[in-house]
Length: 151
Image 1 (cartoon, rainbow, N blue to C red):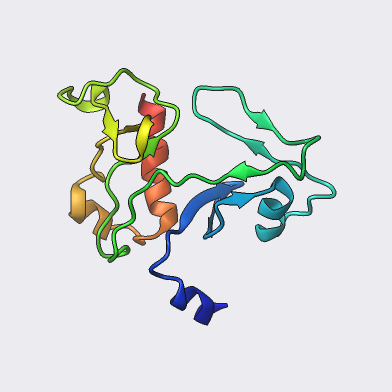
Image 2: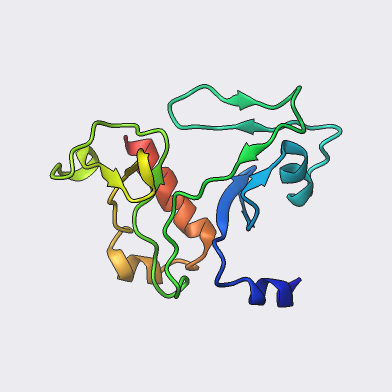
């Protein structure tokens, strides 16, 4: 598996969490069954809910084989672990577009598409703050969670 990942480093990884644990995939379409199985969760005795900040959960309890389009809202730099990713791109947008706003009022259009919104929120203390973490996906997702909780 490590060799396979090494050969695919240049491909577009999509990062997400299951039960607060980071997961990654190269697949653009996954089913709830596949997502849970890959995370070591038994899909026969559990079901998946998609959490979208500020919206009710989307339940896949009776739809274990429904296709879910995986979307990555993070621009991952080539030297990830050295350089922290920028702020997240979110879908749906959660605040009015205001590229000149200050703090949590700032939101801009995203190069990911018209329906996406970019939240420019540097990592706490920028590179120095990133260097004080384990510099991994879990640290960055904690940063994103703090951004979303502050909206």
